[in-house]
Picture (tube, rainbow, N blue to C red):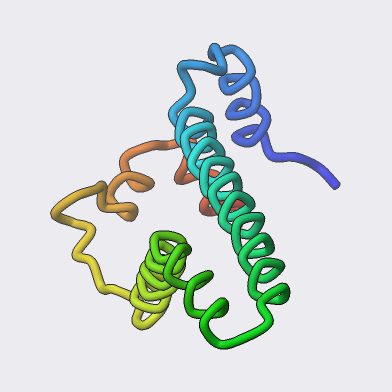
Length: 124
């Protein structure tokens, strides 16, 4: 398979740039940090829930069960809040008029010869 000259030039240009100055890399690094923080938070909540389940499992009567739940009120509030936020976030796909906030992709690609060549080659 032959690689088009536009792709080769684009790769060379990318390799010449400092990685820290690349916008795509910065965006991916920020997203990675966000996801790692979310993962740690979920692991922490999961561990706390496992401890709560263990405490509930040790209860012998209704009053002990209620006491365990009352002592874990902040954890339960946090869990239910997170669950409600997740449901709200997944409920509907928002429609955003990106022309107000971003770049018109057709105009951007049309104004850049390299990107236009990549698009015409079916690589973009």
